[in-house]
Image 1 (spheres, rainbow, N blue to C red):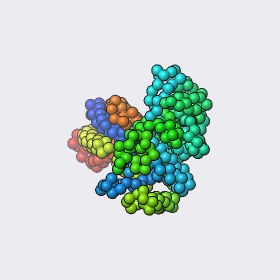
Image 2: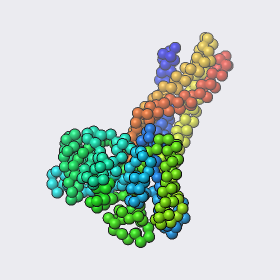
Image 3: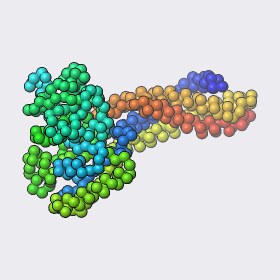
Image 4: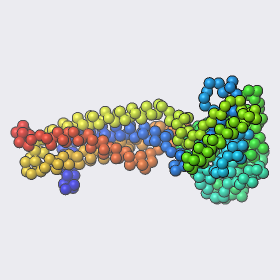
Length: 437
């Protein structure tokens, strides 16, 4: 029966080529505009670390005095060196890592003339297991390496291939960073959380770093961080090296994995107690003010998805609705003109449901055709987005789920547009329709 409906639908569409083309164009334009903006929104609001986003938490505490804190109820986003180290050491056992963004001068094997700045992540050993960073070869450093300020690094796959040709040849080799030589102990596979949740300060859609270096080693060698450093009081005029270990400068991010609500409650209680302890010691001036947000809450708090993108997505949905209304009008005209033909089928024994299904099959063909055009327009639209200077532009690519969603949306839109015209046509009494003709 379906093949019969398909033959009838194709014949009808060929007889009314102009109306058919208009319907397909309306669906295609609506789908193209809508899927372009929905794909951008999907990229910007995606879960950067599926399966773990509800269990990774970013702690915040308030170390400032009343004058420096002002009326801002939110504690700083980052931690001072001593607080980060204390929380790592005294916190509940589990996966955790302290970190900061940095940039180092890489002297490539070709010589000094090829020196370049490379984005680097200064971090503690737990970073790789905490975020599930995949390794192509080798491994990360140990707690003992961190404590001994070992001069070891982990390279990203892209940089390892650029330096040594084959990324697997990098482990065991030496690279010169600044004025020191480091031994490569691991190479990570290409890994890109989107958004870059663990350090929003670098840019929510920044690329992951090419080099990972032990945090204590970076501080010991006075390697300058590239992240934000916020100081208060008399420390605002310190040089950047002195800021690193000052109790009145925050520059480190801390992440911890808490698997159960009980662990979350216990860690929040630990942060409150730690703040009270530091206040008793004279370091903190204010009452405990702590925050503990998971990845999703952290992204929402930082408003990673700009309101303008959400507005554009709503406007694109509105445009699709306008296109659907136009398609309803075109289908109503088309089906009404065929009322005599359809009434003859009814008079020969076809049920209303048979005629209704025939018209829906015809609408589905229009939807698939419009979806194909919409996909082409969406790919063109995403290409235009990728030419923009926005930091998220390079990630604006349609993945398989969004591609399938485009086709499904096109068919669903065409079927929804056809329901009323098909229902209205089927309600017309056959005898009346034939008499009118």
